[in-house]
Image 1: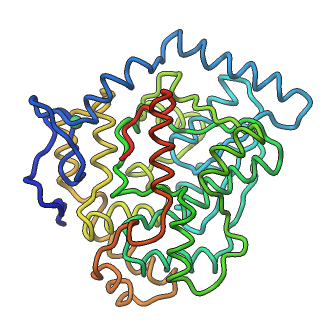
Image 2: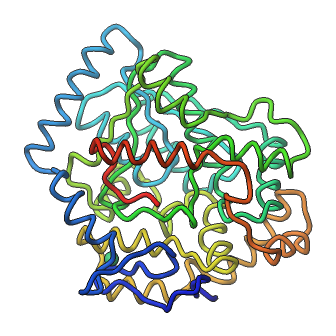
Length: 384
Ligand SMILES: [Zn+2]
């Protein structure tokens, strides 16, 4: 499998993490450290507290959530994918913080057996209520096929958009004031660059891709543009997002082990592999068609936060994300499920590569928003 970068720069890899020139915008200093590493030390680390100070910060928020939730059936909403981050937030919320969350899950048709098991085990083990929103499959399929036909790298957008738009719309609709998410620095302090992973919240881009390549209207597919959820929901509807994992010690392996022991939770091979589509897309499609390997960012985050050695990360990244035999099975499974032939799917894999810029997008506005958030210290990870 080729993971060669496709831009014209001479190849370079960071001497501290494993990010490299497959991110065409990466910058190295005289030591050979990349800007993600420098940003981590200059901007993220000084503002990230998982000690007594972090506990005070999160407990103040928890007290407010409890007070505001008095007399209601639930005091907060948690989007649950079945992956480790969201699962651990659910566990913390109920057991450590004493909250009364309503769990919210979007079934976009691609749950792995582990994801289904993990959701069930947490719901039963903690005695919580779950609301599952099932995405209309013909619409989901049509949108996913439109992304394949469009030639862009960000094929995970239909799924990701359904997840977050569904959650935010549900919160606004039901008057929920607090959403707890699994977003965290510990495993995500190095964010995938936008050329690998475009903003799933850019509804303008999604609509244009679907207008050009879709075949049926999207009537019930969950939709929300970035302005609606960042501004209208936040400041008019009063929906706040809380990120508990940034205020407590969060070590991925230990968290998974705790979930396994407590609930019979099942591990899966790599971040995001709780969805069979995402496993195929991140593990096979993106590296072979575009030379982008998201594990580079995931492993680099773990290196910076002391959970993985650079040496081990280099060994892992030299191997395929999961067994090649299973990739072949996934290829057929995905073609079948989308209702196309293997040959048609191969055609999309081999067609000319496009980017989000080949379609209408809201990048100018999002850039301004990102700049504003960074200036205000609300966004500390590098987004480019
Ligand atoms: Zn680096």
